[in-house]
Length: 97
Image (cartoon, rainbow, N blue to C red; front, side, top):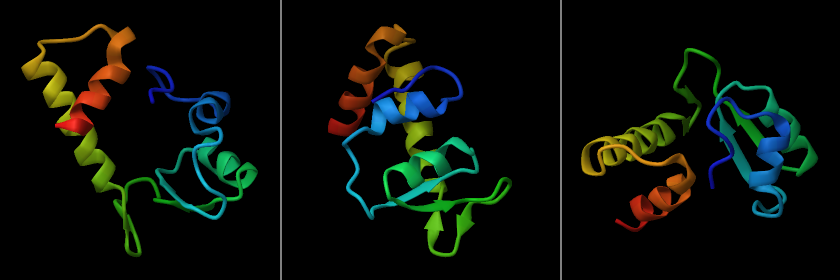
């Protein structure tokens, strides 16, 4: 689910993740501070990858970066641009393919 088109605020994150992550799950994120509050409020184990790094022990942020690159390639090359109101549909299509 898409939270917004810019840097998400805590309210955006809560709207996306509300009741979708089990307590005690591991949340691996970049160093954006809003994720810490989300993890605390939802009783999640939070692994923040430091700025300028790609790993923290066995956790690797490159997995989501690669996913983002593939989604971006799909939208730009295959569909030649999209309407942002259908962005969730493109994510679902990408996951299906």
